[in-house]
Image (cartoon, rainbow, N blue to C red; front, top):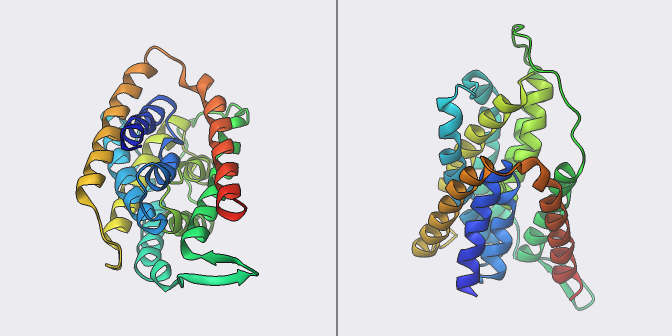
Length: 264
């Protein structure tokens, strides 16, 4: 199973490099079902993997001038604060046994996996649906909707802190709609935000999570390798055409996790 896990880790990076989003949402299921990592610990591991791979992926966008630093700061600050507080205080405060219905017990681990599966279903919709072409920025001065950006950033940070996913499918539309960024610049800026909040969230762990650094380093290394493979393939394959198919796969995975954790 570990060999399959490492191969899947490569595919996580490939999908991220090829279609630009979505790949990191498979990190937690891979860690839980293929490496037998506890779900709560897996969300912490995922923060590190997602954060580092996003940081590496953002380098190319920096070189092309497709990262809006001001937007990254305005959106990133509430998101970073939210993810840090979530990992440091909210996650440790969730009891190991939440409630029971007859013989069925809702535990902290089950809750984490169900929340993650719901996020997978939501993310799959954003990948499956046909995107409408948006008009590129015409060079007008950028205007921020600060109240909505504050709320959106905080919500994304809370979700990232709880389930360990980058939340790119939430951040990119927010940057386009609330910060009026062109799509390519929104993607590059999103990667910077994801990298910052995920890594800071990981190092904001309360200390109750025992980290298997050798496993974490190995999964991260294979995912990073996959990113470079994905970037290379993106020059030969139109990733946007593969995005809906990957979305259906993520949807099926999300449904499977919900059924497995609540019924089977």
